[in-house]
Length: 488
Ligand code: BG6
Image (tube, rainbow, N blue to C red; front, side):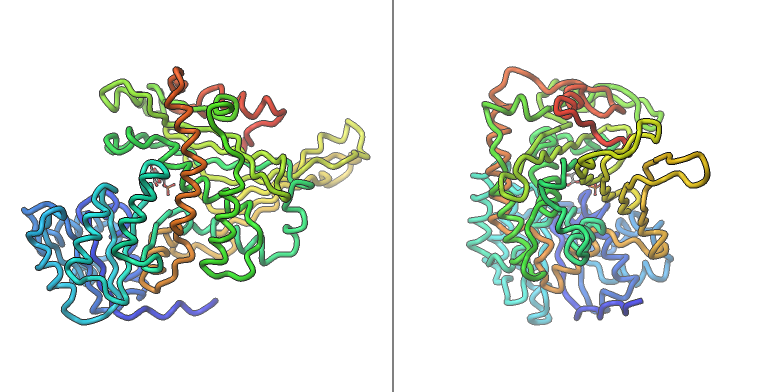
């Protein structure tokens, strides 16, 4: 086993939105785990900033203790909580900033990370204040969450405004899917094995499916979600990033810019979908009341308390128009209130050109490589094998399975946020989106969104707990293919 990495020097991390959902569910648990693994050195300071004036340092620690209690023993939790402080601040107003600056500037020029776990409309005011208060030192980094803007123009506006305060090398645009273990492994699988690369192209790949299915609904985020919808919340970022990693050319080396240059080329090669073809290449859906995991759940309009035309499901047939991939469909689908929480990439290879077997031996299905991101990370190659024993040549599909848990043992599962937060502290931008990538992804998404907005058709209803509207099944079946049913 390789030695754990050396912990970085003590650093300062300021979480704007320190009492919010992201801080509670992801950021503070991730920091606690890294601390417990010895990756956050004593002397590190974590400052929660939020509007709540009723909290002070002790009150914040008590709140965070309540969130984290089930995840660590009391001693460890106490030691972690001792790193935490809190300041109430309305970031749009000047009052209180000098106090934050005083706290942060105290020990000199250590690494300083500002995590903007806030609504995107205050990214720019926060960055402007940070610069105004002299908080942009040589080792300062700012982290912003997706979606960045709601279309290309607004994303460019945010990027420009942040760019006036921080250099691109200081700006970390997070897409937490890039921190997931299987997503990282996709790069290893493609470029550390000679096996796949020669067949990773249109001559041998029939199609690719990328599914990100969730069982949850909008979870108290309706105000944000109803403005975003599945296209802006999931497809423009997470699903397109996965597509890029499947489709990109080998970078010449594993460096942040070499990798991001290749992803950018894929985004720019996506065949446009717009008014003329959005209806034939895309399906939008919205869930209605149904049952998930045996529990009755309300429909989206009931959760929202109002009718809405926002999509909670998207299926798209995309194409990367270049020499490697011409003609190979990339079917993307994502939705809330699906029957299972599962995220998978399926690379489906072409059928054998000619079968030497007779009908009685059983069908020969094309090989497929299934990369499961969650819930159980694994890579499975489906091969056709002879059923052992007497009885002649009988064929069956068998999985060549590499479950991470079995192969590498049940070590602590490193959450994407743990990896990404430490990458920011270490100054490694490889798993973060560069400005041009974000804008290229919007440039592809915008005409689809515009076509949907201009259409008289509302998103198609689907029952919560189903795999989306029947039109999504028709989208792929029209091409003589089916959604791969490992996910069923
Ligand atoms: C977020 C979306 O980016 O990703 C959420 O805003 C979604 O709507 C979440 O639920 C899914 O992340 P994960 O890691 O649970 O698959």
